[in-house]
Length: 246
Image (cartoon, rainbow, N blue to C red):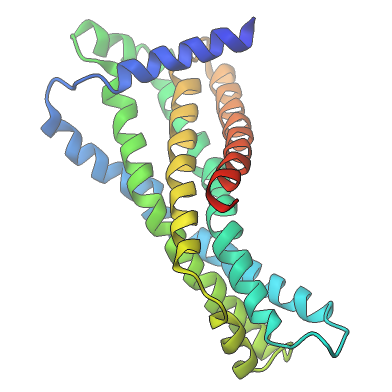
């Protein structure tokens, strides 16, 4: 069946990727370069989206508090929990999958159809490890920092939007944002991000590495990389939530 063939091909590729590199020092500048491409160049778009997501959560919560029995500080509490537990990790990684995952697949796919990967193999270089390992390591290292930044921007920026719009007072939002805070929630989101980063980078690289044909197939590989990355991230999100929160 195609699904078992794909799983086998993916597992074989990951075995090649994580085999011992010939010259480990060559990978360091590649990892730094990939960290810049994957993380630092995504700071702007991630911060902008999370800022308005935090504002929307706060305003929607305020608009649904009709009963006098529900305190206004619930707005700050709901915003904090939504951003830290879900939006900062899952939504940010979905955004990165669309932005970075397609780039990884198209970059490696273009190298495949232009015979650059074959040239590396002929020279005795482990092309899978050389091309893919730096991307996986960079994603796993940089995305947790990006998610922590998203937490801060989402809660503080979202609160600022809600306060300036008159949905909640500063004191109420501050109290709710601090109420029953658990540092474990941040740890939970960071752990999820590490798994999501690995899935996104490795699945995207897999689809790019096994591209065959021409420019049209490169585009198709990029599309499949994004779709499968998103599906696997959502499945992993469900499983990790069951393991880490229940």
